[in-house]
Image (cartoon, rainbow, N blue to C red):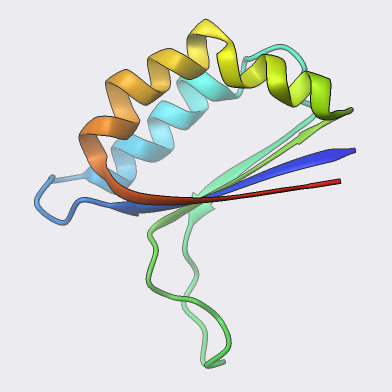
Length: 99
């Protein structure tokens, strides 16, 4: 299994940025072929100081292997998500890929 985890910080000056990012991920990313697991959601507050609470949205996508994830990265829906949603509503992103 190949896991692709993305942490998003939205632009504070864009109204409804979090909601638009969540909806855009569902619309553009979930249907991409090769996605075996898809989970996107809001940051959950925690009383534990070790938990990062500075971001707004996290995405966890699972693939069978790295080749499937590589194909996802260049898929037209992924590229459309970046242009129509990500660039407009996000100011920062961190990506964690692991097997």
